Length: 230
Image (cartoon, rainbow, N blue to C red):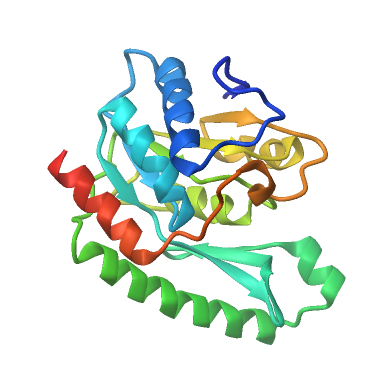
C-alpha cells in the first residue's frame, strides 16, 4: 500500500474553496497515482458531502460515479460525535468513544437500527435515479470530503471487503484532508490511500473548506443524473 500526501496544486495548510475544487485537485492526484493500469475504476462517493467531491474525481478519471451509503452512528444527545458507522451489512464501533462515554450495547444497537433504516431509505431514493455499478474485479475509488475519526470510511471499506459476490479487485481511499493518525489506522484496510493534506492540528473537516455548506439529497441525485448522461 502506498500513501500519497500533498499535491503541487494545493498548499497543504490552506483550506479548499469548496468540495468541487477539492474534487478536481483530488481527481488529478488519483489519476497520477493510478496511472495507465487503473483497472476500470469506479468512483464511490460517500453521501452526502463525499459525492460532491467524487463527481469531479469521476470526471477527471472518465470513470462511472456511484454512491456507497454509509451512516454515522452518533452518540445519543451528541449526533455529530461518532460512536460507530454502518454501510451495507458492516457495522463499525468506535470503541474509544463507547468506553469513554459508557455507551451500553442496548443504546448502541438502538442507534444503529435507526441509522440502518435511514440508510435503506436513502439507498432506495438514490437507486431510483441511478443503477448499481458492478464492482467485481474493478478498482473501487472510495471518496469522502474528509476524515475525522475515520469511522465512516472504515465502515465503507469493510463493506466492500465483506461483499462476496461483488468484491472489487482493489480499494483506493481518496480524500482531500484527514489527520495523519486516522490515515494510519486505515492503512491495513485498503490497497492505497490518497490524501491531499494532513494538517496538524486538525480541528475538523469543515475547517479546511471555505465553503462547507450542507449537501442535500437532491444535489446527490442531480450529480448522479449528470454522471449518467456524461
